[in-house]
Image (cartoon, rainbow, N blue to C red):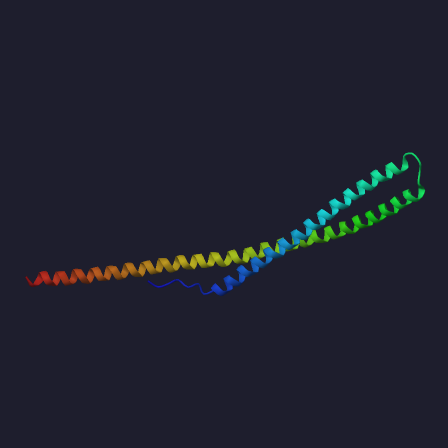
Length: 153
């Protein structure tokens, strides 16, 4: 029996590698987003701690230098949080771009897989048809030979 060979098998392998690369790129972007979210959480915790220190510093004896230091640090944290927000927005756009690229790579791969499956099915159907035809011819020859043998008696 003949073996099925998909003519676009090399292209199929290339599409699979492209899909795998797109998955990896998406995972990297998602990982970067997670890192930024973790940093944002740490900044929020630091800001909350700063607010508690600022409240404690304003109770009782007021140390103006300490309060000013807290306010400066608060401005630094706000600037860091703002920058982190910009980075998060950029990485989220990148995640969406990479997600779309992965979807497109999956679509291209799926199209080739469907083509391969249809061609394999057609090949198997044709092969089965040929085998049945050969068996019919063999059976016909066999019956002809047997019929000739009976005719001699």
